[in-house]
Length: 265
Image 1 (cartoon, rainbow, N blue to C red):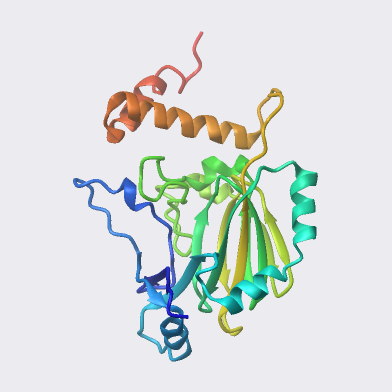
Image 2: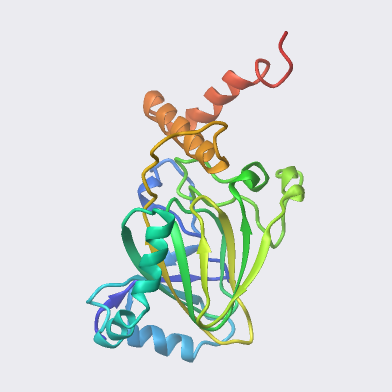
């Protein structure tokens, strides 16, 4: 196909998602991966002839009728009755999008969480997931909401800094290996660290993103993911009120330190 695809390029094996709209002029932000749009045949040629020292590639393309008739035909043949039955049973909102992911073996998507329900369908190769429930939030140190790496953990799983992130030692996740014809459900706000396993060639998978269902009645105590939603909203409201996202941290420290950080009679 001559249609341009969204391909990310990285000098190392990590592909950490970032939001370019959150990069400000006074920010010294340098992403570890960058977009490099290319037609699919060019991408296929590059991963087929890839050699050590070349930049790594990861195709992350929204599925629509522009990506090529062969892909669309295969996509339509998916068992839609099955996946839509899951949507109905779980009372999710509408399907928002599908993403096709083609990664070189050894590629890593560092630990992060998403705000939608995710059904992850594996087509080719094997991926290793480490999943953490929302209750592990304080162990994984996600970036502030206003940061380009919003929703991404600050912890480098390859070389964790326990001085800076001491509670990461207490993190306890679930390991899952996903292969062809497997479908993994990743609940919204669950952290997940994903690796395309080596010696299996490139991996191909498709995400089915569903919006959250409507909450008919809020019950207490709140669920862990609901607490995460509240924390995100507090950060957003403070950033808007202060007109300077960099002041949010100082404001939260002022509220907390000496008032909530110790027992108050």
